[in-house]
Amino acid sequence: MTPEGDRHHDRFGEVADAATRAFRLLPATPHELGRPRNAGARPVPQRISTGPDTVERDLVKLVLTLVELLRQLMERQALQRVDAGDLTEEQEERLGTTLMLLHSRMSELCAQYDLSLQDLNLDLGPLGTLLPPSE
Image 1 (cartoon, rainbow, N blue to C red):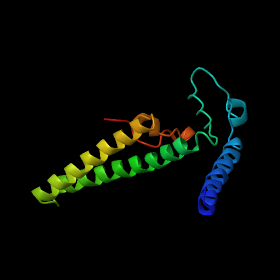
Image 2: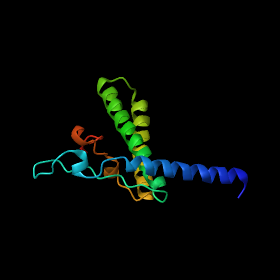
Image 3: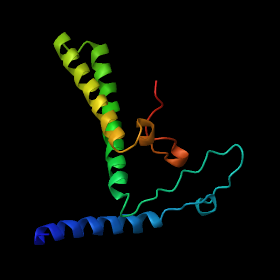
Image 4: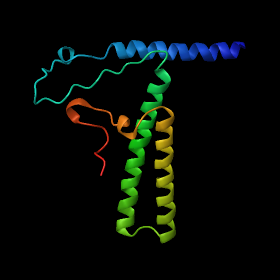
């Protein structure tokens, strides 16, 4: 490896180690969360398990989650503009095609990393899930 390649590899190792240390700080059990588990309670979010061997997939999952959130927000904004009559027919067509292509590419990327679009919906505990339910 070249000296630059060694530095690049060292950075990945440093990032993986930092992520592993950070995730060890997260509570993992209902006891650590301070919430009792009873029949009516929401299930406790699973602990994120990461390490040097899974850091790439975990990072991709986080990035795809953010992209999916932005895609859904853009889609809602586009629908509001269409309903308000702010767009020409050509703009509506281009916007619809773009959003369909983005959704298709998101599905491809999820499949590449063995994820589903549902896997991207992070559980925020008492706040519920990050993404709204599918319609």
